[in-house]
Image 1 (tube, rainbow, N blue to C red):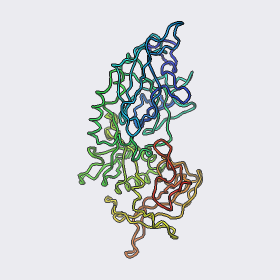
Image 2: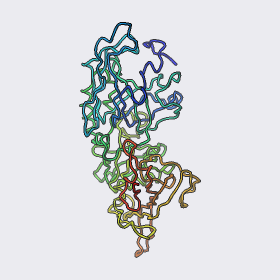
Image 3: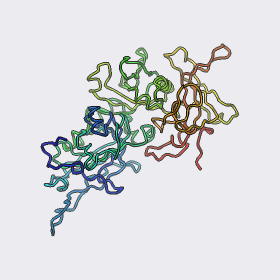
Length: 476
């Protein structure tokens, strides 16, 4: 490992980032974020992917650790700290009992790496929900001599658009714009689906392209020079409702991306102010629970958009198309609102002896002549399935099922394992009078099991993702 010239040797990872935590009380600011790009968790992974930094948008502030200054780790005999300590982390705004912005102070640099001088009351910044932060992936993060910033034994990469918790420790006022030090990065179980649609984190991101840019400019003025380089002013994120006329189209055969756009003659854009959004194949399949089935993933997104049940979490980065001009500067992941998508299903009619029921919908896929008439067929008999078990019908020739990539999305493909699912077919129901056979284009399961129902903090209750009497899991 190469040491930087301004480090005081020996400089270990623990010395650089500060103490990680004391029992269950973190000593820094815990920020729950959604990442914009992948994060390598080992030095080898970083070398393979050439990832140089972490970029993420703030969803919430789960914990403000007690950090204060001044501090002397080992005071000399008979001497005390020069002044009463002051907190370096203070809530700036609180809405409905939730901290929505945090004031972060810096402190005067001390002669020791462990000590802190007095709090600098003139050098503070305010972090808000919806802001985007950036941190460089330095070598010390992967230093295994004492501990890394990642959970012990973790390898591989954290995929883009993952929810992580980052522990940030305030640094001194001579940090040259990098006054927030990363002490810990921990992946979370809940995905962005756990932030739909009522959480404060989700509301903080609901803004158009122009509103997001104005938000970044406004908040930049609220930061002191000590952390200004870690507050993104060019890259940002937002959540938007997708136009009903939007559809998934190919970009180029050799690129592992598709594009969400509207027909050129429609006069609409996928989201206000943004003409197209690119989606990586891996992200598309992960956020639709259609692993190894790109066609199924595309079909679900097309149908959800037409039904008015599609949102996107989008990120802007003017470097996205630096090496490949065919790509755009906006990327996104789809977020399917399951309740809106299956809103035509009538809960009262589910109490029947029929094996399945057909529900008409008021939308169609305008770009497909075969799908001008659409309906949803839902089974009324649940199917039980265990992880690793083969599907219960012969649509796919596979030997085992995999866990759903997004466990908090209630819809899963037949390739995914589920506990208790109801089969859902979407497509043209056909017409017996006109001699037309049914033409279903989407085959999935509604996972009604409790593990698919998690809240924004992973504390959800069973049965809260649907209103169907036969589908709902009643609480004990």
